[in-house]
Every structure is written in C-alpha cells, then in structure tokens.
Figure 1 (cartoon, helix red, strand yellow):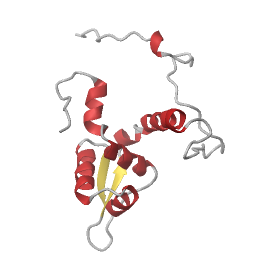
Figure 2 (figure 1 turned 135 degrees about the horizontal axis):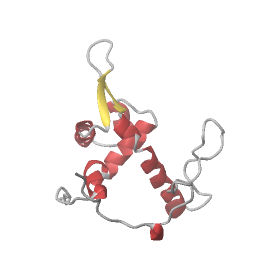
Figure 3 (figure 1 turned 90 degrees about the vertical axis):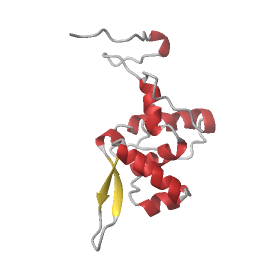
Figure 4 (figure 1 turned 30 degrees about the vertical axis):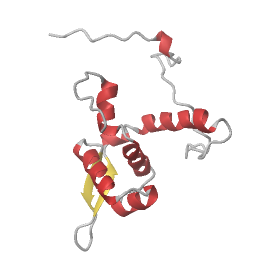
Length: 149
C-alpha cells in the first residue's frame, strides 16, 4: 500500500499525490504525444483496463485531463490535457532529459526531441534567475512566506 502525503504542507509531496506514480506519468507523456482515446492509451502502455480507468478518472478529477465527448454516432470520449496538464511539459521534459543523461547516457538517448521551428534539439531544462543566469541548488534559500494582511 502506497503511503499518502495528504498531511504534508509541501508542494512536491502534494504534486506527487496527483501525478506521483509511473502509470500516471506515462499517461500524461502519451497525452503530450497526441494519444486521446482509452483504447489507444491501453494499447500503447500495455496497461490493464481497471488501472487505466482509475488513473484517467484521477487525472480528470484533479483537472490534469478533461474528458470530452468526441462521438459522432453515440457517445465516445477522449481525454485531452487541460492548461494544468499542459503545464507539466517542463516537468516531463526535465525528467526525460535526466533519464537521457543518467539512465541511457550521452549519445544513447532513445528519442531525439527537436524544436519543430528550428529542427534542432531542444536545450536542457535549466532554472534561471531574473537576468537569465543559471541558478544552482547551493544558490537557493528556502523559507516559509511571510503572512500578508
């Protein structure tokens, strides 16, 4: 049984409550790749119907995916990323880039991701300061916000 983090006041822990298992992230990955139909998720992922049903419902409940009626002859639903879901693009890109570097190694990446506009590989995701300079973990200070009002 998976541990819950409902009691932690932490954005990472609360985000993991929504997207923190591998099936969920793979569903989101495939949604970014254009998969919309239940049967297509099932076939691409090799996931059981009951697990896929639960994960899709969870993502819809949390506003990451929207279930839309795409039926012409009766009801047929598809799943599309919401703005909240599309906002995970940077997260998935960073995770993929981490895997490319540390799991597969330089030159062994399973996919090449190119910018359609330039035809060149997209650069590594980096955290930048207001002037556009890279920020490293030692440069950070973490604190609770000062109450307003």
